[in-house]
Image 1 (tube, helix red, strand yellow):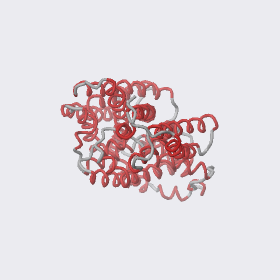
Image 2: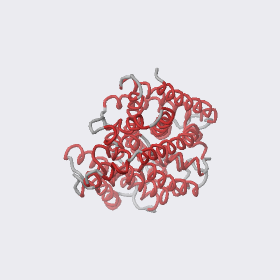
Image 3: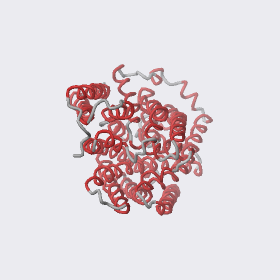
Image 4: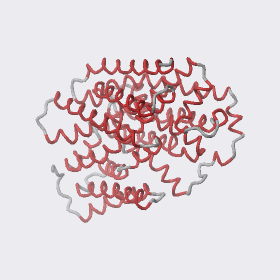
Length: 457
């Protein structure tokens, strides 16, 4: 075992120890899923930031900038920054005041358990693909610093994070996100400083102009669709909503989430800048998913390189554990719990943990069969989120307009339209079309269908 790999494994082991230590606080389902709704400003800020700042930014965005220039990073970090800030400014406090455990709870309270279950079924695959992207990224990191093959590295990565999340829940997530957030910010700022000191901005100035063109090889519909996916999917994501719901007050939820979005832009821009200029250091023919790691390996002395890898692993661990926790929460709390209303707190907690374990294994299988971190994340963000966002908006601010039929129509129209336009027609504006379909389906169903009472079926 080389020194670098040993240091990475030691860092991972320390995060596992934290998870086991804080698992003692998980006495109820609310403790496990939302850390007892007790997070202060700093822990909420870094919980949002570290959860959202994952492999697709550290590895994916840097790699896309290396491969395609700025046209490859419209989505991340720029689109996601807008989404996080809007989530904080418009949604975080409103959701917190509802006393929810998951977004699907909002749908149950407003439209009934049938809509709750459909929402959970739509959201779980998205979280699974997002988790799979992080598993693959973790495996890429381990593979790049050792002689481990990608299969062995991904297998080890999946085993570690499944154990980490099953045991720790949101309490461990929140505490490790604070640690990982500081390591992540420090590591990437360090890398940016080294890039600047080694003449990186001179290399950027020598790049051809098309590398800085956001629309290079993109049509306007494609560019707008690429921006729409991260912005609107963030507003409909359980992963970020859970962090806001875990805050100790609506004011903390709002302010910390907005601040996390601004921090996301600053640190994400460092990864993009390094990715743009990396070809001058490592050449132009490397695996784009290992660009950031290879640049750091070349330019940093061993102690600082180990710090950078700690930052990279931090980004992946926090995002991956958050995605698995969401999948387990939706399956246990919103699908299993209504079927067995007499479950005790201990049984609910056990069910949530079994859900995390099950979906962790599925994420591992998906990671083995995929070939792109960035592509997995984009598919995860777009799947079903247009319909979910439309229903959230009407549930929060639409009064009593529309009933279960409207919610079903928007969810099915949004998901079905995106699947057809993206995977059958191959439209460049598939997500925008799905958003329009969901937005039209809700009021049409409200007008033509009897409103009725929320369904419990």
